[in-house]
Length: 77
Image 1 (cartoon, rainbow, N blue to C red):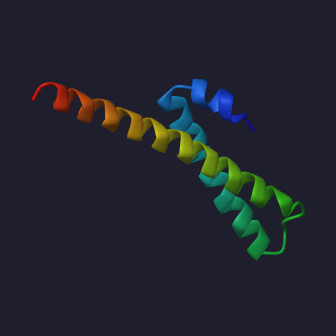
Image 2: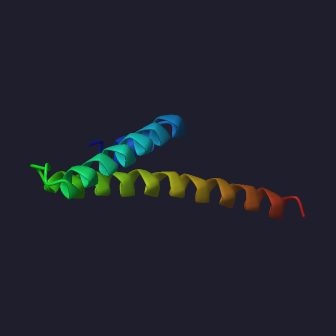
Image 3: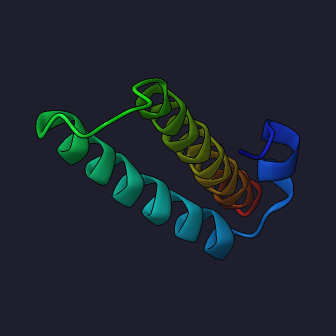
C-alpha cells in the first residue's frame, strides 16, 4: 500500500487502475469470506482502507480542479 504522499504524486490513470484493482480484490475477499475460505480477515480492512484513500485523493483533485475553474470564471466576470 502506498502512503498518502505517494498517492498524491501518482497520475490519475494510475490511481484509477489502483482503485479498480483494489475493488476487484475486495470483491474476491468478500467472496472467499462468504465461502469460508478466507484465512486473513484483516486483509478486508486493509483493502477497504486502500480504496478509501485512493477515492479521497481522486476526490480532492476533482474539487481542486472545480475550484480553479470557478476561480477563473469569477476572474473573467
